[in-house]
Image (cartoon, rainbow, N blue to C red; front, side, top):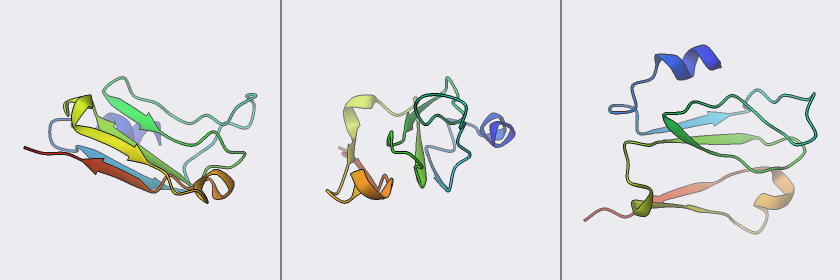
Length: 85
């Protein structure tokens, strides 16, 4: 997974959706691979089923994460909403 992130171009790959991301089970909270060029959106569930990476090339004031109530129990991070001019 780390190899995939390093291959991405944040100027071209703005939003990356990962189903069943690799999860480090040797930490107290669920963690996965990160990249300093991307914001990581993942729920701190026991076994998150999705991860969303948002490029830092996108102004953080123009997007937000939207969670459905069932997201907390399922581990799904469902929607990123982009507000464009």
